[in-house]
Length: 304
Image (cartoon, rainbow, N blue to C red; front, side):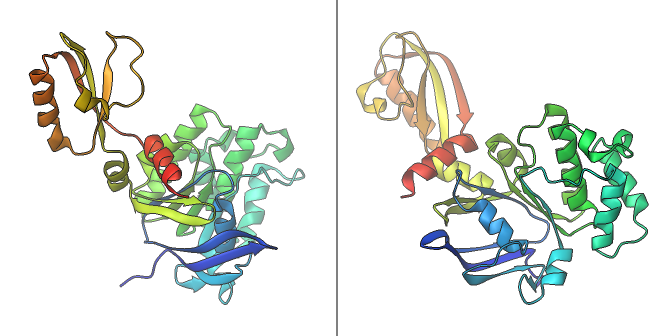
C-alpha cells in the first residue's frame, strides 16, 4: 500500500491561549485533487504552514510522502511545492533568474528546459527577462506558481492561487494544474471561489474554528447536505400547505416560480402527485442540482 501524499494526525496549534488548530486529522492520497475550505480564520493557512515546515505544531504530527515534516524535513520539503497567498518576490532579479535561483535551492543545476515549459504554460514566456518589480500583480502571482512547480514536486499546495487575478490567468493556471494532476501530482487547494473547488476537487475537507467539520467526496457532500432543488412554475392553485416546509426562500409574487428542496430524487414523484391532488397545474419544471456554496453555508451553520 502506497504512503499518503499528505498525512496529518491530531495536529494542534496554539498561539498563547488561542487554539488555531484543534486536533486536525486527515489523509490525502497520492494523485488526489483535494480541497481545503473554510471561512477566514478557520485554520487553513496555519495547517498549510505546518505541513510546509514554516510553523511547528504544538501537538500532533504531519508528513509529506511519508516524510515527517520535522524529523525528515529536507525530504518533506523537496516533495512539496507551495503557492502562498501573499505576493513575495525579490525585486533585483528577472523572472528567469528567480526560477533558476529557486531551482538551486533544490540542488537543480540544469533545469532550463523545465523552466521554459513552466513559463510557457503559465503565459510567462514573454516576461522571462523582465525584472520582477515591473510585473503586474497577476504576473507576480504566476511567478509564485512557477516557483512552486520548478522542482517538479509530487505534492502541490495552492493557497488562494486565483485571489484577485483575471479570468485568463485562472483558465491558464487550472489547465496546467489539471494536466499535472493527470500526470500523477497531488494537488491541495484552498480557495474562496467555491465553484472552482466544486469543479476541480474530488474530495473536500471543511474547517471551522480549527476543527474539521466535514470531510467527504465532493459528490457525496452535495447529495448529503444539500440534495437537490425542484423549480416549479405553478398555476390553478397555490402551493399546498404540506409542501410549504420544503420551500427554499420566499415567493415574491404569486405567479413567480417556487423552489422546493428535494433530499431524495425518488421523492419527486410523490411531490408531483401531491401538487396534482391539490389542483396545481405545472406550467414549467426544472430539477436543479445543489452547489457547493449551499453545502458550505449549511455545514458552517450546523457546526458550532
